[in-house]
Image (cartoon, rainbow, N blue to C red):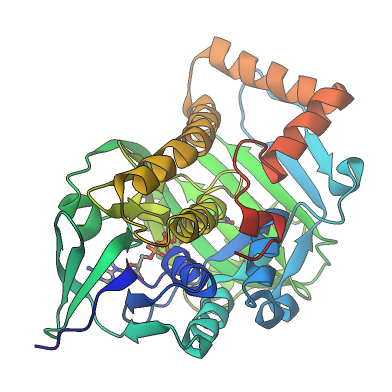
Length: 398
Ligand SMILES: Cc1cc2nc3c(=O)[nH]c(=O)nc-3n(C[C@H](O)[C@H](O)[C@H](O)COP(=O)(O)OP(=O)(O)OC[C@H]3O[C@@H](n4cnc5c(N)ncnc54)[C@H](O)[C@@H]3O)c2cc1C
């Protein structure tokens, strides 16, 4: 068993949130250990808001992503339900709030590769390519034992170990959990018509079918369906799958050719009751899990990473002390709670068979479409949340 000296922070988990947290903490000059195997293959794409891109630029990561990212200049929401009360189409243009794009969409594999490369280049970031087997919190430090038998001791542990977080259990933090009767299937496709940097959400009775631009004539597709429909779609490949995806996208992208492989994600909403306790701070899906509506999940995860790095730098003598973890809990709560309430309402209004709920949703979208100041305020809040802009998200180095 190896035993290293006391570090400022140990990050557990090498998905995009954990890698960003590790790179941000190390960029702030702290001694950091990262306990993470290579992230498993992930065919998803992430629409990253301007503030997330600013943070990745500041951390020296975005240069490797830029060529793989496509701007989302226009967002369309189309009511594709067969219901009596159908909402009018809502259309949002980034130039209305003075931006070139609401977000840049990049395949997770390119984002993770860029983060991996940056992590490897930082001399004060030591990566152990193993899983954490045990996490134990004490009065002055947290101890992480890896599956290979190494022991790491740090003042702060950052739990970025996803939905079944070992770190969250070690901190004794409970989660509020709600399952949805929905599964998201993800595909990457090429198509015969250009996407013109438009992302379209077709809202169906079972959830949204969303096309998100990638560079060239390619797009990511997130198809939220009932579990039985998911079974049907998963049984398709080749021409029948291409035709089905073209039908569900109302042929807006012309002829579709699906690339090999797809992802399957049963949907749920999960929120940790606290975001930090016992010298352990939770980031990303260890802290919150959302249905893929409005591209919130990873953008929140990157804000978590930026916030914990900023707070750790402010309390660099002991980044795991209660004042630091209490501040992290306070700062992240408002941001995460407001997004989760919004996404949950949006998703449940789609699934609801109640006419009043469908009516309210239609009126809401109609108001957004027709009342310019309301639409612009909503767009600004979606892209640049006022309540939660850690320094890195404003492009300031720590
Ligand atoms: C269909 C879909 C589409 C989405 N689209 C978007 C989007 O457009 N924009 C957006 O912002 N968000 C989006 N999201 C959300 C986003 O994908 C997630 O928020 C993000 O992937 C979470 O990253 P993470 O690093 O927190 O978790 P994960 O990616 O789950 O990473 C956790 C990591 O921890 C590792 N791990 C687990 N246990 C241990 C252990 N004991 N020791 C060490 N490591 C461990 C795992 O192997 C994994 O690598 C989408 C989600 C879905 C389902």
